Image 1 (cartoon, rainbow, N blue to C red):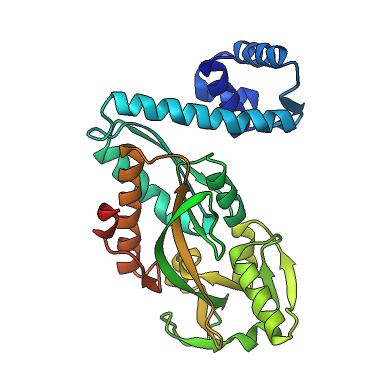
Image 2: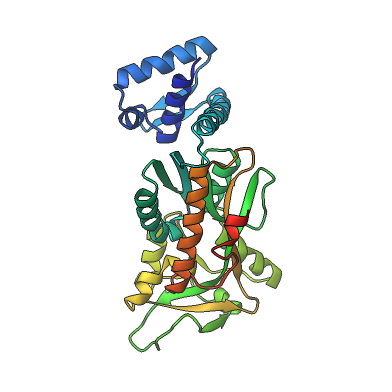
Length: 319
């Protein structure tokens, strides 16, 4: 077993396909397959389950994946130290963001990092909240943005901002203009058809918790893990939704949606920037973290993020 094989194996698991990994690694697919076959032969066990839909790690493969990520991270850190990474940010930095915020964050972050730090290779992934948390805890990414009430001992957290949730609806011709300051009691949630995510998600957890506390039942018309589909149901007027402002800001600006902040009780969630506790931040990750903080401030000033910022621009430099 060698570091090249581990890197190849990580790429296949991350891409979910041998052919996709081969393209990313710039290696012929048969050669990549042979490297994995040699690794499986050496370890005397299957590491991947292959199907028409791609590949997934077996239980043994998942164990190897976790170790491989740590080994590669340690080698990366050693290389960074030798090259005096503290003075010159370089290398790959991976960050995972939720879909509702990613559309605003990803282009700005890529532009900033590419322009300021040409030796930093930025990899931006998009996942829902629970997946983000798992990826951070398992060290599969260097940084992640998530909303959570339960902080894991496997990660470090930096509170970025707190944001309210809104009852979002299709704007009718006779609806008055809204600017985000209008409010509606949570009670309203129980009298309108809703679209929510399918699985446990930060927003859905909050809504279900408040419904249980109030002894009420939600009128759940449809569920979907797709942000795009949830927005489309709301735009059509078939359902209402509960969303943070960044997820519908563009449609609100076009006059397609209206929104009221949910109060009594206030539905507010905290947004964190997090990273694995067992992986020390190198210079490249630190500068990406700082750019992320800058972008949050700019989105707040532009009205795309609503709520309360929890960190000043200079705060991160002290940590």
